[in-house]
Length: 455
Image 1: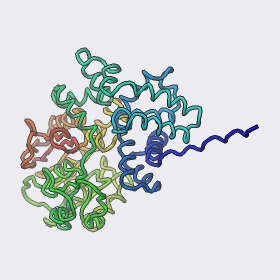
Image 2: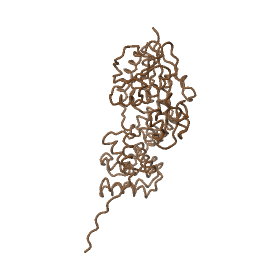
Image 3: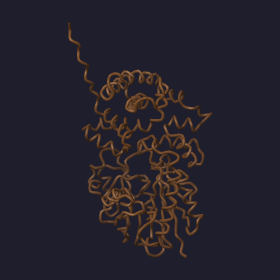
Image 4: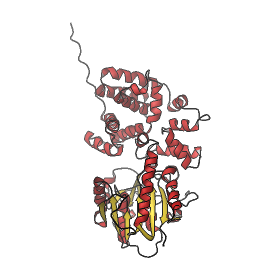
């Protein structure tokens, strides 16, 4: 009698295993994908091609989770919440390969089932195989037609499923865009497109020409920006040495606008009220140093203050301080940047999991904090000084409404911020500035520019 053959040991490919581990880290540990992925790639030792595949598979699956869950719900014979989370993550990875990547259907199913054998076991791998074969019956557009509300009956619901954003986010973005559904759809598409790698040459420490000589291309808007078409930014000497950095052009523009606005009298003391992790502080500190001014950067959290110190070096002072009740005297500073904590809905391109973490009931608490911090910023600036109120969110409750309330309370003048972003088009009616991924290719940064008037 022939002895039974031992079960075959599964051999999942390393790139798909990295993508699976990324999804589990996000789900189990609330990890940030952009921080977890580099460590996973390094541990796996993937070559450039496989690392790119793992990145697209992991990030793309996180972005498109809403659509894939709707598709999977139509292919699974039980309520989706009853599917074990690791099984659901494997199914999502398979759905992304079938519906959004140039992976042949048989290869997408076969490789994902092999991954399932390794991480879930043979029994659940058969379940994954059956479900993915159902998913493979239709292309993406046909699935959208089947699982999304008809656009004519419920345009917000349709866009939410078709572009994989929570419904409340789609509604808030539409409101911020003045009600245009066409522009909302363009923004949602931009949110699902990986952003280019934008670099900043910190004035007096690096030049754009140096970055261009290292293989970058000119930036679109910021005079100190460059764009890296590919490769590892750390391979550029100026970035390794901290003289330049990766920074979205929108972040550069709002910081430079504060520095560019005209100021009467003394211009020596600048403040970044909520500076962590330090990107805008690094740029402002370099500009201040060139102009004979000095930046103080504060943050409530010690670990974030450490990141700021690492970024600014000797160019600025750094303190651990609660921006709501600062330790300095009222009227100490000439220019103040308040990059307020927010929902982050303007950076969904870079933070693929963020759209699923935020809830609509997060907004009121954040808006209350933003009002408190803005009042503190206005007390911190001297009469005649300037405050830039900045958020990486276009939500009206976190942007225009906060500034409206500050102006209504009195003791502040609202300036036309558009004048300090020269060459940037499609800025609307003002006076505040709202940048957009689909219009400007930047994160959706908001800027309100305020002056504390003389008594």
